[in-house]
Length: 294
Image (tube, rainbow, N blue to C red):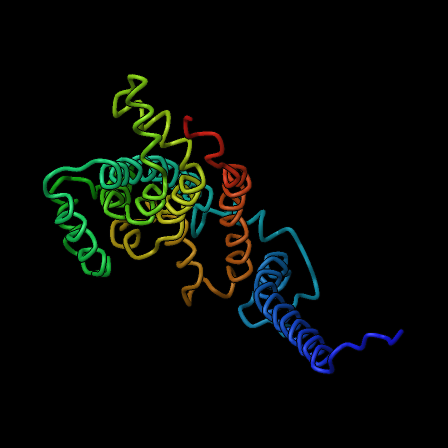
């Protein structure tokens, strides 16, 4: 019997595949290092004993917890604790309102049919093409006319209104997901005697859990990280959000003493985001298995 020999090109294809896989892994490893180094540096810098903005070495050589202690105890320049709590409250309210508005509008646009539906979607699409910075001045004068720029709780209410009011127009991603849900679910719910509200709350919302996670994280990040609108509305130090307050740490009169504390603040700001993502990631596994009635 004669031995079966493999074609020569088979070996060359395998070699090229191995080389391609090796190059892809090397590229991904390099990109991972580039992505991780700034995060590691900020975390290490938050413990740097040298508070100057131009340390002699890339990574600190002496470490201390004083930056975190000073961040939460020294109120001579900024009250970071108050800023953190204030921004957290605003972000929680905006997150809840954002999810509710987007879900409601997306459900109406995806599952219902009514007059002016398509014109509204086209109008929202065109309106979303304009940058939000264009409306900052108008927003400030409207809030000032309503008496919501006086500070304290008024400023918090103003920020919640500004961040949540226009969230319903950002329904396209959620609507696209709802469009993939079979209409047979709605029909089965109607046959069982469900109203539109019951169909929305008991059928559609459980199915859209992965997108609700995305929308909740997005809605939380908008007020948590925004600087432009917050800097316009928060005119005094007593009303600063964390983004505006951290920017003040980098001003020339404070940066020499607060540079390492700024890194500590950056680490603290990332904690609620990480906690929110870890808490909600379980819903990414939601599926529609067994939802359609036979």
